[in-house]
Length: 252
Image 1 (cartoon, rainbow, N blue to C red):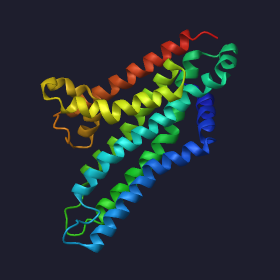
Image 2 (tube, rainbow, N blue to C red):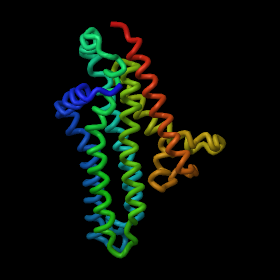
Image 3 (cartoon, rainbow, N blue to C red):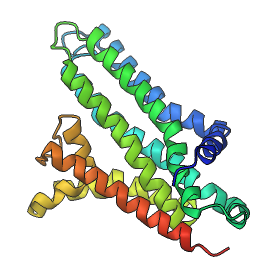
Image 4 (cartoon, rainbow, N blue to C red):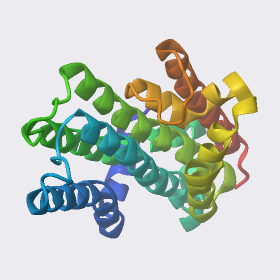
């Protein structure tokens, strides 16, 4: 299903989109540096009122915010990977060569991950370093907290790639996919999480599953670790199945 040559080709096409790469770094690494810089300046100006930039509480808050930013970047990169061949008409030529359509689709996900996951890992390392070294008198994040935060960032990036690539293949255009994914992540998901009478149904939301992996529960939804993993796998599998079906049946 996965052709290494196709994966390298897809990753190379994405690497050549320098504007997209710059935006991805700005939305993740740039935002992290900005947030930490503001906290450092505020603490230096008034240490009695503002806590240090590091520490467990600040680390968890940064992870919660950056998990969303990584998902947004994954939506941008994944939708580009999933739709660029269709939008430019290249898919017709690739399919005409007799190559497996599923292989053509399957290569887009690891191609997108080749961009997103290193960025997520860089953000995780930066956040962990700041959380520990700038904790001051506060409790520093433990190894377990850092492992959970890192896993949440990587899982957010991977899930975002699966969902965006699948939807892009299904719809055939990246613009609507970015709008759908961002609308769900930034508006619909928080709204659903806040509706108490939905009960355990809220455990099926990816944001709550990612919170559990990061050992957080800001939305007040208790999710078991095993359930969180199953939820993320289910969303990724559903997106992959939808995208693969559309790619296989796409008329040329």
